[in-house]
Length: 314
Image (cartoon, rainbow, N blue to C red):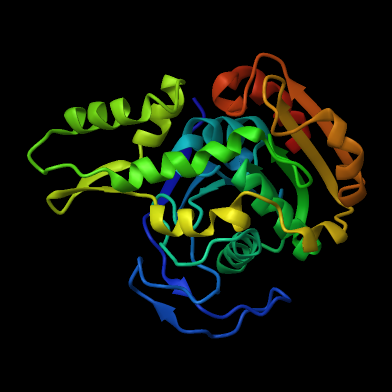
């Protein structure tokens, strides 16, 4: 059996200065994970998967995977391991700012998420990487490739578009509002707490899997229930910084190899938008996974792995 090393990093400091040329200055660090960041990049929490066998060690660029809105690196644990085994590339799954174990900040936008990714490359001495992202993470990796194309070997964008958006995204602020208003006494157990929140969400989210996905962010710490998400920050920045891709970036072009993979049952990536997308990503290829909706890697994990592996290989 091929061994794997899984390295977890809990939280990073907020880093305030970024020189856009991917040469970063000696900006001050903040040890308070939940302290404000005045527009600079953050040091993202991550998990790394790499082979322990000498013959698997290679000079291939690593893969950095960013999850979607209200997700975390945990959502990509199994798939990250599988991609490492299939490709031989080291895989980093990261928590975006305001998600998981990464810092909470007042600011959230795709240019900032891109800066976080570029800073991650700098922190880990990675001259180049394959960037892959789902939904919000897909827009983040697109932004990074458009801002600093030289550090991106390949781009894989999962069920999201730079030129259009799904009508279902309009319901997300309502989810956020319900989650923000939840109050739970510390005397209830975790199962009771999750059942209570599930009942609150059920009228607006019919899909039980989506409800469980959101509820997985609930934790009990320091004698109280809290969300691992920065719900206030996400809600404040949702329109327009999260709901739409920055128009200013669509005037740029990324000439590198790019793959867009959509769920055939999803409307986040539409075939009619392909021509407009190709104006920004001229080397784009488009793939649609039959029987999969927006969470395509969870809906059809085996088929997704079979589709994405050759796209990640040299």
